[in-house]
Image 1 (cartoon, helix red, strand yellow):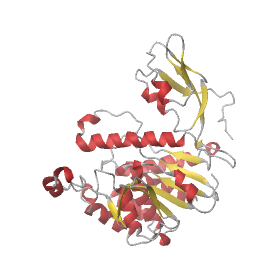
Image 2 (cartoon, rainbow, N blue to C red):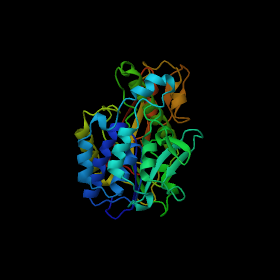
Image 3 (cartoon, one colour):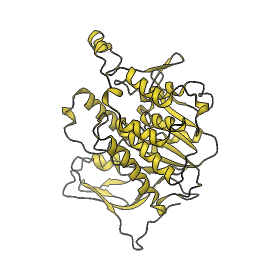
Image 4 (cartoon, one colour):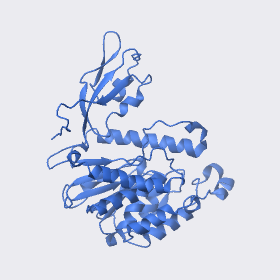
Amino acid sequence: MKTDTPFTLVLGGGGMKGLAHVGVLQALLERGHRPSRIIGSSVGALVGAAWAGGMGIAKLREIALGLKRKDVFAVAHADMAFKRMRSPALFRREPLEELIRRTVGELMFQQLDPPVVVNTVDLNSGMQVFWGLPGLDDIRVADAVFASCALPGYFPPHEIGGRFYVDGAVVSNVPFAAARAMGGGPEMIVAVDVSASSVLTADAQDEGFAGVFARATELLMQSLLELRVRTWTTPPVFYIQPRVEHVSLFSFDHLREEVEEGYRATIAALDRAPEWPEPGDVGIFPKRRVRVRVERERCIGCGSCLVQAPQGMFVLDSEQKAVVTEPEQEWSPLDGGFIRHCPTYAIIARPAEQASGTLRRSG
């Protein structure tokens, strides 16, 4: 990506894993890439709004690396004791409100440079609301950010103008489609996803209510994301996924690792110039050629691949074994999620051999 290429930066949600966004911003700015605008969900909204509001990367790093559990999470003992099942959330709102005050203050959306859009959902109507878009920019940034961080069950819904809002990630965790509603014409999107929810975990069932619900939420977010991007065309999206999948949503044991991994993943992406989209390209990048096959001895003919994969990709032959209709395909980082739904792990995808030794581009 050239240093003068305009782009929208989309920072997804992911609990404490979202501190990787600090490293992402640091890497982009060091290489001379300043986003034209930012769209954020949850912690992505917090990091993006803090930086656009004037907080330098050094200060953001200092705050991120110094966070303690008490700075974000305080169990709402009183509500759970007296309200029981009617308790609004597992955690009290005050620590998160104080963290947002420290990083965003009393700024209004018009004071942010570059512009920032914050992803939320109206709890009662289900409407996805992007604060910061024209006509939705007359509130405090802190209110929108808290609402975007209010993952249902963990933090109470946040009231704005008499309505109650929660984390927009329940509809779209990496909401790059919102870029189409922002002014300035279509431009490339750089989307950063720290959810890593497709990764196999171990013993999630032993983590109690919070851990089980968090895992279920991640799976839902991933499924929604995969559905949304299947037909995506323009503007082109370059997808960065820092490797923080081993970190739980609420862990404070890997703060420095998360920030550094965001930096590493972004520098690595910037160094792979041939993989970035060019004018006229469509879809999600980077794209890679893969070869898909089914190990017949493992296939039990359940048909799960016909349900989960894009229509027409698999068929069942006369022996009720799955067959790939087009073995060699071009995938983005968000393709291939159907593989994990095969109950016998019979579907295999490997990089396709390239005779020229270079990446074949689309578009």
